[in-house]
Image 1 (tube, helix red, strand yellow):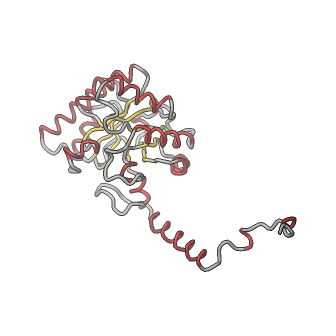
Image 2 (image 1 turned 180 degrees about the horizontal axis):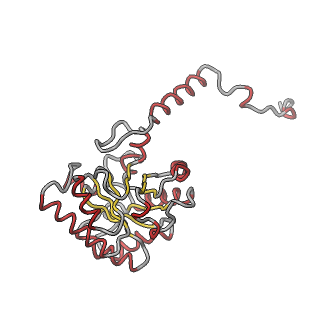
Image 3 (image 1 turned 90 degrees about the horizontal axis):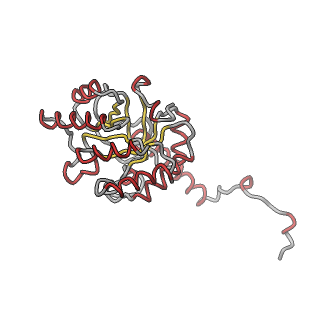
Length: 268
């Protein structure tokens, strides 16, 4: 598994990345051989109960990135910079990115990217903060883009491809391509020397990423480009229902779950 961004390369393809927001999930990801964990702002929808990623704070991402970093030894940990934590002014952007590395132990940060993040990517790379760019459907622009597929016209596809190239030139070590046509993702992958990580972008990227809840079958629904590889929601429901029934029926705790201290028999 890659332990530095230098090792997160296309020659190791296909690369695997999954989101995680807590230590137990991160530990399981590492044991399973995941190459990189993204502590995504998708935690807003997937874990924190928000309707979108927009309310997620820097403190929330920092705390959960630290939990993931503490639970892993070999997996590359990438922290997502949340909405308005970057791009407003350079000093604040650098400070927030630096927190993810210095305080939380991330190896890199991810930016919902565009033309406005090209110079920031270059500056962060100069300072030793590796940047994973993200183009296509960028959830932080949900109020502008919705959740529709991006890059479907010649003009839009050309713009995404050009911005991808500019981010590579600026020092990005990898690029996430989300919900774009597979043939556009293939062209960009061929054009770049840095690895591309697809999510709803077809099979020709150098790697794939999904939200953990979708892979585990934990959520009530998932996007059309995801597959549930498990049914954790049903397993949890069954286990919790059995617990409730055992407590209410007097079967738990049983004798083997309790301790009797003989010296306390004459306490009262």
